[in-house]
Length: 411
Image (tube, rainbow, N blue to C red):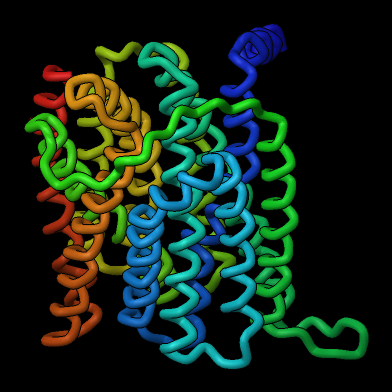
């Protein structure tokens, strides 16, 4: 208890805007597992097609990069915090559109994915911008460790709770009506909307004075930022599969949403504490060690899935994925922001310029990974794509480590 009180005192000692961002992200982190895991599971349940899930995610990524590109225009008339809050609400509304529409046709799935992408794009780009101006490099390990702790914590609690709820409600009679799994998804999205409103209320407590310029659109960049864009593309390639593949594999080999939630939850329990401790005690000089540990863990998971390609392989892959993501992000995002600090001073450009181009880099990697999966599945089968493309992506990810080390030293 003394340790917990000490951590609370540390949290309260942070600047007001830092505390506001952390509380907002703490709340919205409850919605992210629904977007990342159960939206894909819903598409898989509705279509019984792994390729449809990939198309949904690809449209989501298109929405994200579209948001980043038009975000510079919106920032001329709206504050970043306002756009940030709008993205939070839109994410829940977009999910509700997909769950409440009559029939999950390919058009509805793609349109829903695009609007979910718009909402998450508004969220992430403005979150980066506010964090960039609210924190220093020395604070960012703690900031992202705190965030990753709650992202991991809710990746335990929400999938278990939502998975159990979805399994329980299918076939339950209530108010004289037999409920289905689809009704359960609708209730989950209503919960997501309520949490999103609470996150916006928390965000309104901040006093953000974020300087924003007017010239955001540039093609030529310093060589250091070009390296960062390549690193973003490599991250995006893995990110697309991290969002898409777990739901496909679990629904295919293990069972339904209840098992999906349980696997996500068990594998995330230890990670939540691990990333908070790492963020609390690690220094900027430790980031590459954390980064390398995450990459190796992801690669091991992809190889085990390919070798077993069964329920055991799925368990191994999802466990490694849940370890990889927060470790990777804990090292990646502070490195990205440190690089933006350096390059923006050299080129004398607004920080959003680099955040926007960073989303384009992520999209290039995501689109390549998704297109690779779709192409392999088209000429062979979904199973072959799941078995062979995933370890190839894991192996390519290992190239990120020497590149990230070079960027870290140069910035």
